[in-house]
Image 1 (cartoon, helix red, strand yellow):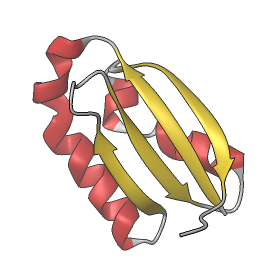
Image 2 (cartoon, rainbow, N blue to C red):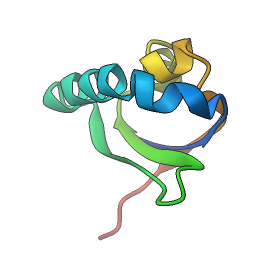
Image 3 (tube, rainbow, N blue to C red):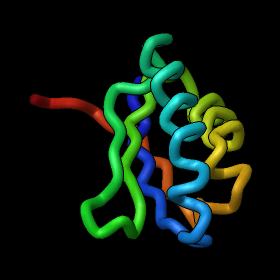
Image 4 (spheres, rainbow, N blue to C red):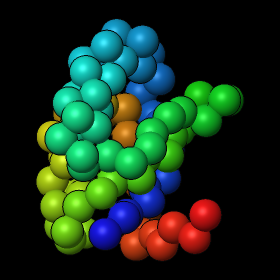
Amino acid sequence: MKFAVVFRYDNKEKISEIRPQHREYLGQLHQEGKIWASGPFTDDSGALIVYEVDTEQEARELIENDPFHEAGVFASYAIKPWQQVF
């Protein structure tokens, strides 16, 4: 099942410092088939990640293990089950 998550950034001074670890983490999840799509908004206010996992709890656990979460970059996020049409 897909879960779309919209993140709002805070602690923006940490973004460039932590981004390499964040992207390495997401790359590993993508290789494991747990991320369908991800990327920042062009104004760097946040990001969208679509997780491919069985439960919302699993998505939350992946978020909590993200280096951006651990560094306080995520000010907030909203998880919604998402159905791909096209």
